Length: 164
Image (cartoon, rainbow, N blue to C red; front, side):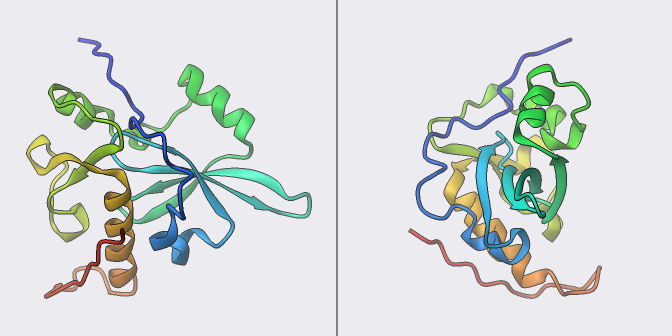
């Protein structure tokens, strides 16, 4: 069965404020958000190199990891338009299909109730629609607090603050 689902969140205010503020520790000061997936992950651009070229990166907000997506915005757009060579983990498509009975309203993305990094699962029952800004902010705060912990370290408490 080939089901069509929206892979991007219905968000029109990505440019308001500093959407990546909670992730600056990882993405750097000159990163600028461009797209948000329905699963709350981010494609952002950062200028770098001697020619100040704009590279496209993928930020997995669940794993707290960044990877190079494309060496230019133009090649990235061509890639996602045809979906040629698009890594499957970028859109978490299987999970997104499971969630397709829930609709995302303007300004929302799917977010885990219990983040995978804290033992939550990548299953339908662990996700619900939330404000994209809250998801991005809280996931960034969480990952910053645990980034230096060795793998397997028990986490007794975390402190998150919703920015408004």
